[in-house]
Length: 249
Image 1 (cartoon, rainbow, N blue to C red):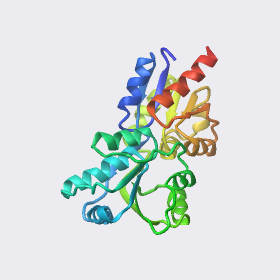
Image 2: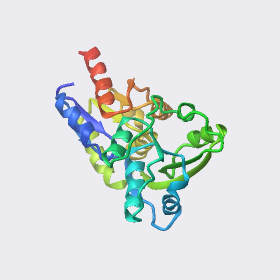
Image 3: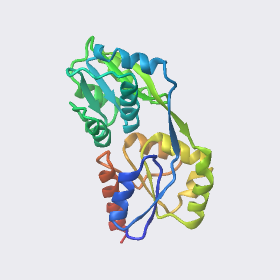
Image 4: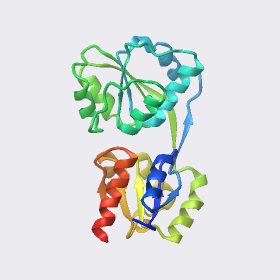
């Protein structure tokens, strides 16, 4: 992939871009989504104030980790030592561990059903799920079906296809891309909003998705993913892209 221009669609893409650069690629960072905090004093703060009443906190993204821990700091609340944390993917786990949180579970599969299964018997268990306001219903539905009492709380807002990214994306597409990396269904939706015709924009471009949910979103947009990363991490994404590059060499 040396010399490849690779579109990086996620915000806060430092580690992913560093790993791409280390492999000789040229990361083109243009976020397809923008993350912004929810207003203080709402459901997120209420959940933070009763954090001691939960048995599990399930964090589905690094953005969710930063949002929840940020509100806990602002409210001067320390998570109780007996609280168990689950992180969907190693990048989310790393964001929690960076803040001193011990992560009890990192489910291998990112689907709602798989996460619910890996947490064991949830009958009557109180679970906090801090995530984007536009998160899929699959995970809370699976947790509830397993008997959990779930507080599905908007920890942050996801702006799809932020306007400041429109012109940089157009320039990048005009200059030519060899690959594009999508890290969530929201980044796919943002690309569709800003690029217009995703099939034309990604014609001849290698597309790598972080997992099956993101891959399905890209397929729904009319683009067949070139590869789906096995590991939901920057390392896994770069490895998947490298495999495609090697096969095409």
